[in-house]
Length: 96
Image 1 (tube, rainbow, N blue to C red):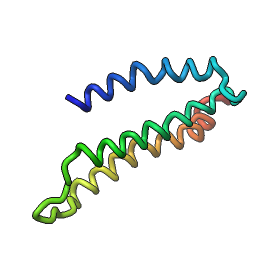
Image 2: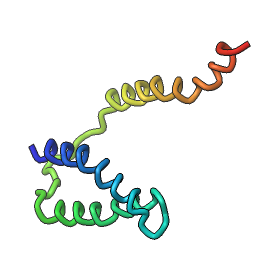
Image 3: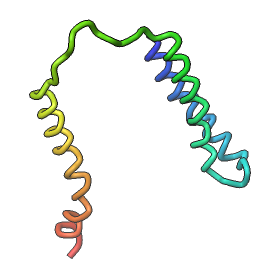
């Protein structure tokens, strides 16, 4: 439930705060101060996680899932490769 609350909060408040920062034009940097927000939020999340999340050490070692890793690499390759090459393909098939 905590994950859902974080996702909803980020999806709703992120564009609003980002728009306000762009409109305020902090230091005359246009859109760049948006990235300055990530630092305090990340530091707060790291400190809160260290305090409230349980230690993730397991009494037994887990093995690397070779099959799952291979499927993931293959799936991501099949997704990313066409996205990279679409500009090349469009040049061959698009205009004459």
